[in-house]
Structures are given as structure tokens and as C-alpha cells.
Length: 228
Image (cartoon, rainbow, N blue to C red; front, side):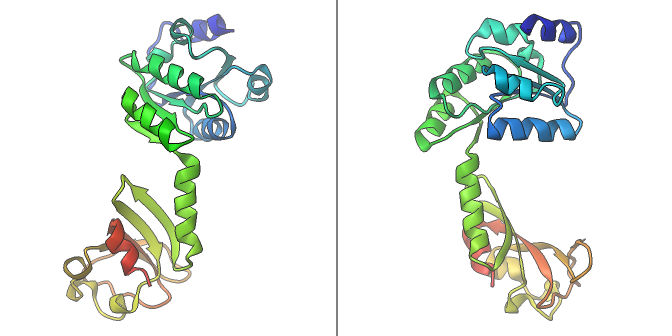
């Protein structure tokens, strides 16, 4: 099966929208299907035959293979893909070995899932620039939503966020240009939406009201403190 996929891919360079997803568990499988739905060329790889069969016909290519072996990855032309995601979670050794093999290639850009802080630390030490911790990140996001005043929350790096919320009293009923929110609170309101309306970019003349929704961006502590 590895040779079959290689034959389809040989003789051409991988497109800019090609991604190899290694490990088709809940995270990897969901990611692969979403990428496929967006028109991305996806190569799904897993060691379990039943798992591979369940994705047959749903992904561009899907193959049962041992991703810890460099020669197998080369047979599958993974080194020609622009990006690879290691979604292996239950087998720590396989995750680390697979990631290590991928990092020996000039391509692809590697993303790897970590199931714990030590796992994430090891991946970082290997040289992975994009370590994914879906359960951890989702837990943090949901914790902010449960508080009630935050409607959506996205964290960039460790100290910059975008928050969807309602405008606090100090941001209501006056043009944003006269409020000095960045100087006073260290944040920027970048967009707003009226009830029943659509999202719009803010300007200095924008006046916000109590039932509006807003998107606030800025350092984590300041942005969270600004929410009502």
C-alpha cells in the first residue's frame, strides 16, 4: 500500500496545500477530515488497519504504515509535503520517533500533538516549533467561557489574546477615539457587532452600546481585566 501511494505522488512536487496527518485518532482524524473539507490534499497514516479502512474514500490518500521508520516516510513521499501533523497521542515512543524522523527532512513543516507537559517539553527539545496541546488549550478556553462574561477566547503565544465579549461601561456611549482605551487599559477594540447585525471594523467615530458584541485584543492580563 505504501508503494501504491508513492506511485500516485511520484513525479510531482507537493502542492502548497498538502498535509500529511500521522495518527488518525480523534484529534488526527478530525483534523484530517476538516482539512479535506477545505480542499487540502491529505495523506492520512495510521498503524491500525481498521482505522485506515474507516477513512478509505474520505481522505485523498490513506495508508497503513509504521511512521517511526524513515524509509517508510520516504516511500510515502512525506518529505515532499509542505506540512505534517503528528497526531499520535497514546504511544509516546511512536510520537517522539515519528517526529524525530520528520525533523531530519528539509520539508515538511512539523506540527506535533502533546498529551502532557513533559511530552510537550520533549517535542520542544527535539526542535518542534508547533506543539499542539488540544485538551489543555480547549480546557483553558472553556474555563474562560464558563466565567460568563467572555463569549469567545483565542490565545496567541502565551501573553496575547483576542476576546469576544460585551463592552464594559467605560467603553459605552462615547466615540472610541475620545476614550483612550489603549493608553488607559492597554487594549484595542478591533471590531463590533450590533444585535442582529454583522461584524464591522471599529473606527475613532464608533460608539458602542450595552447590547453590542466586541472583539478586544491585547496582552492577556489587560484584555481579561477589561471584560465586564
